[in-house]
Length: 213
Image (cartoon, helix red, strand yellow):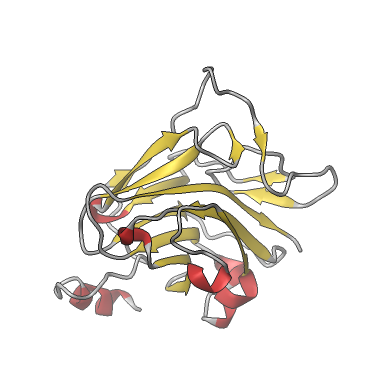
């Protein structure tokens, strides 16, 4: 969806906006879990092994070979249109904390990791992320990636079920490329979108990284 058509879309109550051009007013600074009674670093469902290629882009604390840290200057986590809040949770599968996505009770919800300067992800093959929710507002979830435009893929296609259990998704980057994303010029490597929900609905998100296989 191009910028002009997005402006039209935002005027329609029933039209969920394309997160390719979100409202950037809600930047999220991820708090440090810090010391506490539950401060064991969990390795995740697929622990990092030396010699592997693994890219972290924020929301990941485990071992990695490369890292694009969210610094709030050139790389950001944006909460779109006031549709949610993010809170730290020790109910996790990796590291010290997961993100608790809290629905604001609107007709849609979204956030994403954004880079001010596009980056080349041609050398990476798979996006990994773990999700857990049983709340109706997260029955329909999509995972997106942006260049100038946005491609969103249904999480259910990659094993997510709204059943209150952890599901570890592995999404081929080729699927984003097939939708039109130029992997050589990615502006948002991870975008999360959900539909309408009650203000109390929550989802746990953890273990976000890329691999070269």
